[in-house]
Image 1: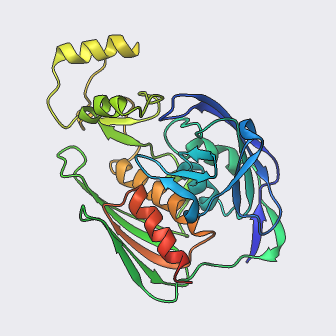
Image 2: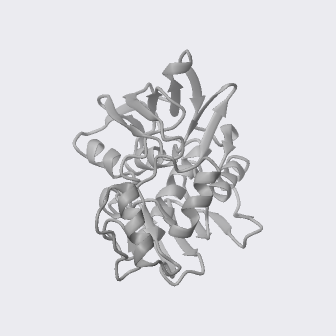
Length: 297
């Protein structure tokens, strides 16, 4: 199969999830063998390649840095580019973080779905590891990567939560990424919100771009107070245990973790030819797997 790029420029704007800063991005076609490159237009067009060696932070999102320039929360766009088969793209951004949009890759998928891609003359080089390997973290999470002809993932999340439960999801290249993975939103627990705000995070988070799981009992008074603070009258905890918009899928949180993993694995430098098994994945573990994959080609 040959490489592909976009056939036009797509523009998106909104607040960054963690910085809260309003940003604008342009996702543009790029020549063959470019890969995905981020360009900080507000920092003299500093270029940052979407490669695992440039990962410099993985707390609640993936950040890439090269010198004094960095760009955060790149995983959703990288996931969408991968899901749609885009090898080469230049992403111009005028701030330190991509916009969170609705908390998923859905807006990217909706835009890309309306157009065909441009086939390029260069052949796509698949990233197939020479051997099976497993990476682990101290929290019991692990990712195993096994050489295969095609890309597929089996993923399980387990937060020891009565709301989320244990969710296992599957993805392979025969599935429709745009409808099955892209719309699934990021999530957090209600009791995590204040501590994260104290750490200077999720300043751009709201009920329009995240699912909020209510793991612990919340009083009617606190819900009323939240309604007033957020300007969203009548907030309630759904029967499934969430505040905000209804679930798209019963396992939407697991599917969002799949979305993240697809995006983070793209940091290996291209399209992966392997079967991936993941248990309790996160950005640190995902990007570690991408680095190890690069060392096993």
